[in-house]
Image (cartoon, rainbow, N blue to C red; front, top):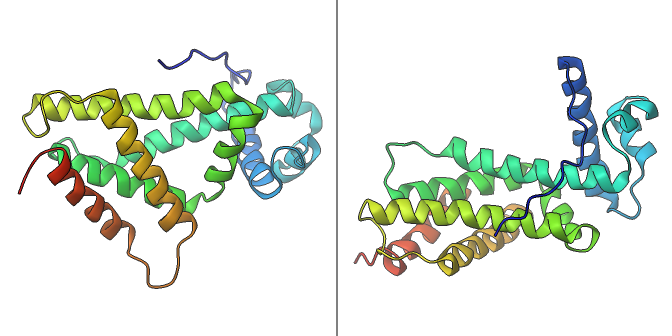
Length: 205
């Protein structure tokens, strides 16, 4: 079950405030992504963001708080990347292929996501667990929708969602983060994974 976490950031009330918060989160992405949690600093974040130290404390109480906010923000970004890649006219299998390609493209452009999410296991275990549980729940919802349409087996289980998520995470690590010259493209990787789903989940020949 996804945990209900307390919002780590104070929500801005103005457009200017929202822009400042976005600058801080983007700067935190770079700071934590390059240095890791323990070596990163609030001053480093504000310097990258080009904002005053006081602006940081308007939204966050500590380095831990902005780290938690960043993990939540990255989770939302992963969700958005998959959602934007999906067309409601797609079949269930096409949706899984598009969602994976959307994730691979996102991870390729935001390689720091793996380091930050991995560090969350030790810095803020609740955020780490919530990140993966939330993704697994979204995948399970898609599998159930596919089953209702007759595209997938009639009884998708939570374990199927976690297995699919695990495959996607490691495909991202191999091809988006560790990518090598002459690798398969994101579309080819998604197609290969989709073919496995077609035979393993949908039972197609």
